[in-house]
Length: 328
Image 1: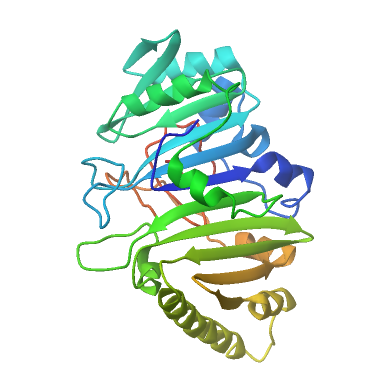
Image 2: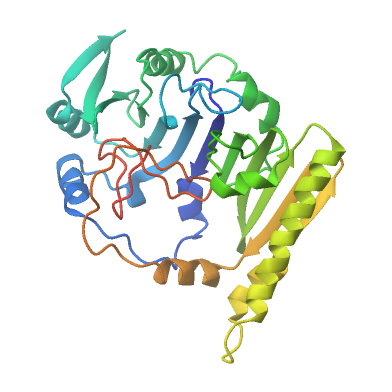
């Protein structure tokens, strides 16, 4: 159902819960706004969200262009599937919306957030669409596609081209276009874009088989480009291993050691491939050691697009908040 974009992300939280992959993670804290959202809608993301899909729209001014139009930061279109109390969610959205459009018998709620409009549409008993793209036609196109689910799925051409490279049974995956770093050429990959000598497409996936198995493949235009990426990534891995060896005399945590030893990067013709295995204990400790916010953050006017691992800020209304993150 997502529109054409420069990147796509997907996570199947229902399978994560079924496989008990997150059983050892600490509970999610609720800020006041998120708690108010839960009280009004009876929807709790960590409990009720089953699937989430995101389309990432780069600004047109970025290197290589993008589908985000005149925006100066990335825009996002999203689909959420889960256990929804339709009437309660609709009442909440109507309360916070500045206006409501009727598009083909579907209400589109226009919600002002930080100087722009976030549009929300309830597509069915379990599905909600959200977009903060400046063009209202994007969410209308999602509404149109939601009515055609019985038709053979095609999807955006960029997604069709690379989705076949996503391993079966992946709990989460991403397909993103990456431009090399350069003056005046921002990247959603931030500093990691220096790995890429020329434009490439990165396919990231995560599977849980007793541990979290990560894989990132960079699809390039030539074997030379793949070799450069592989060499640069290998240098970073060498630094990681050096950091592992410089820990205190107390020794290396076994979960950390397993993670570092699993990091590998190889070249496969025109692809550079990075793999890693993350033990459950490593994930638990990483979350447990993350500092909790001491006070609510001051509102910003720019989106933080640091994304492949998940910490992203955006304009989505409080339909996606926990730990005070903001969905796109």
